[in-house]
Amino acid sequence: VVDLIRAGDLAIRLDAPETATDTTDALVTLYRRWAADADRAGVLELATALARRAWALRQAQRPTEAYHAAQGRLDLVRTLDPDDHPSVSAALAAAVLGAALRLHDLDYDQHRSRITRLGREALGLHRRLAAGQPVSAEYDEAEHARAASQLCSWLADRKKTAAEAVTAGGEAVAIRRVLAAAEPEEYRVDLARSLDNLSRAHATLKRPEAVTCRVESAQLRLLLAESDPREHAYQWSD
Image 1 (cartoon, rainbow, N blue to C red):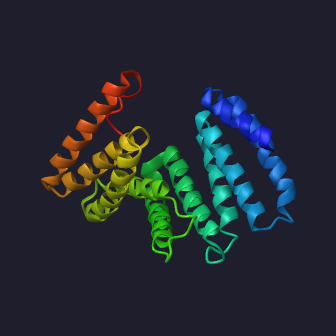
Image 2: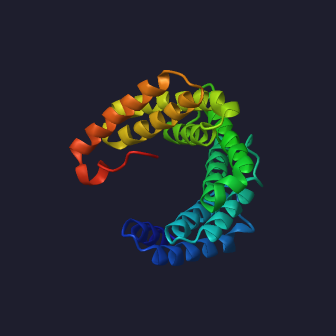
């Protein structure tokens, strides 16, 4: 299993999507053999294998299959009770957002309603984990910010949902500011993307904050381009 995981990850990093799909398919097959008698941890391991398969299929430009893998992951995690353990809530949040993203790859306009519904569910799960006292070890700030920023992007361009987008986008920016301050090379580009999404939401509502967010995003991207021109010079939109 470990060898298959490593081989799949390496194939993705080396831009060999067909090899990645073969190895992740073998990984899913192995986990499925054990899933009938699996405990919670075993089910979550199978869910992770399906997530890897969905990503490999996306990289191979097979969006329909990628969506089905992501939806299979979500259906599997939904068989568990999120109140049973924080690891289930975290896995459910990831699976919900994963299904929404792969559905977006298929046809955003056709599936907009379900995509945004899933996006709201994912963000709600992250907020619940963040609100725990004490905060659960399963809570992941980066994934929380990712879900918030993505929901902002999906809601930003419609006036009836733009205010909700501002709330989600502001949440993502606040988290990513903290992350970028601690690890700038890792999170500055994510902060810039969240600022772009938040700018769009403010612009829909005709608020001056749209300009402020866009200027800050541009400044961050210039810093990134100066540090690594090849990697960042053309990343001007999410």
